[in-house]
Length: 388
Image (tube, rainbow, N blue to C red; front, side, top):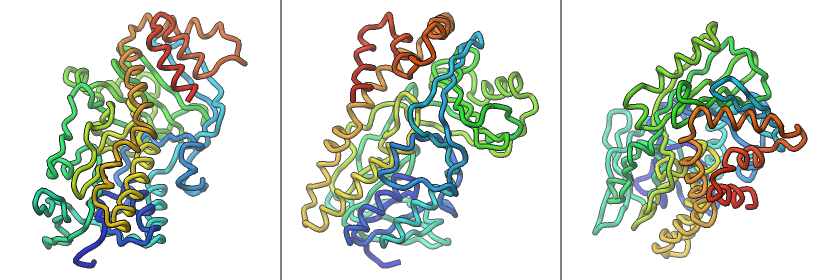
């Protein structure tokens, strides 16, 4: 490691690695500090993505694709269900391999990665972020930089050290847990979503197949719900009822910020990207692609700021994010607040009504229109999403 880099990135998830690649490709020096011993672990993600959403960053490769998805199944509390054909290719990833590939591509562009680098402070000079402090192999180190990109996940502390307000209301922090389990007998090309107060109140439960009888089975419920009954309890109840022979191979738990992006994601010498900036789809809780979008914007702006010797460029980050995904995420947040407050009776009636729709006319858009038929203000929001 050098004593100074143009850019230091904290975190080697999708946001951090994509930021590193886009910055390094412009010829600036980049160091990525990853606290874990290996990029890509632990995997805390449902791992499902749409192909068209991420091919701008990386081309599909069978080595990190577990299964291809072409259908969605929505299951009501009374076990009624509808299955929709997915109009484009989707994937369930092997995130460990996928994240490692993103890091490899960033490294090929010139970025330097260091693992077991636990960032525990910032270098601040006259209110400007000028580098990081971290522990590596038992030694305390300092690295100076012109810009720091904080991509250190939902538990991010780096932004807070820089004076940015990173607090999220507990009601907007989804309590999530997931097992990757064997003996899950489902269609390997279908993603399943379950709803209802006894399954996943104010949230949803998912089953995402990974092939050979293995699937990610997870749940996200609001922080308010999680205070009375844990997400893991709901998940265990579901598994015992629906997949009694399931064998958990891995298990993870954590918080997912299902809200709109932080009010401020940049300041002098710093930008925040990915889960750390709350760049997560508020409706689904998915953050792989949106984190990559945030990382690419941050990495490009950071490099341009250095090349043009214009520190003020970092303040264009917020408007670029707003134009790219911020507006959509605010709409998704409104839709979430409507859907997650549905009663079980409402969910059952939605599925019953939708079963009457001819199969050739069943689309995700028509399902949302059925769901929100009595809420015209949310219907307008849904229309905006699908028109865009």
